[in-house]
Image 1 (cartoon, rainbow over the protein chains, first blue to last red):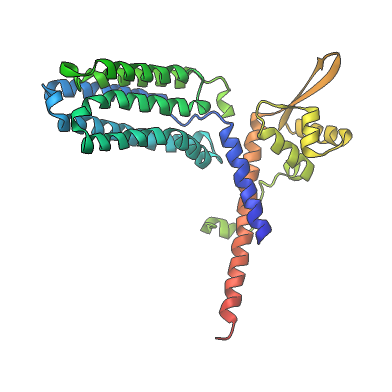
Image 2 (image 1 turned 135 degrees about the horizontal axis):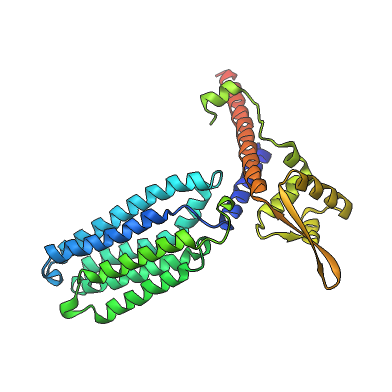
Length: 205
Length: 124
């Protein structure tokens, strides 16, 4: 029995190694583009429904956490189904490898949100900038699975995050376009890279 | 666990491709599939512990089956052979791996069932 388990472990290790050396094609460009449009729509909705977001942080958080959850749900579902189709035999390993690299940054963003809400509610204006920086770090971490141009999108989110942290205080605090513009453009950039950036043949996936 | 359909089919493992299943060729393909950019002849030879003649013969079989591609070039006035797995080769290797995994799981399940049967027959 020990030999059989060893053989299964070796098969698992080979699959893992294959997954780590394979470009990930599980993200659908159309779905990612749709999440960019969703961010823009959420920004329009916020600008119409929250006239003074700086003084109604709960409403602001409700809009953007709902938007993020919806985007994550749609992208997650689509990624799992697409990965099963384009990476047969490797889907589980590839989803795990990509998730391991991207999700820690998203979880860190969620944790910081909770901490600021509980312990420093006066500093909530920092959230849009911090979210963008964490998202950019997640993109950098998962760059080895996607086309190299994705580094530019990681840099875009770091730059917009830094800009939000520099200028997003006072009257500009929690403004709708602090989220709508960076995520709207950033997600469309990601979609374009996913659509046109792969160097290997489609069948190589 | 085996599905009902698999159980009806018994233990037929058609995808255990005889071209891939040979020990040396399986080693060569594993080396190439885990190095998708390709490997030189000397690298494959060292990784798989094969002689020149043996490796050449197996590479030829894999090439004929279109599982790998072989390119020959000159490096510092010396011939250099480069091997790379093809899209078909990678696909068939993954299919082979899935069937091999299923076969081993079937054996493990059989052993477990036998052990459970033996334990049930023991006097209390």
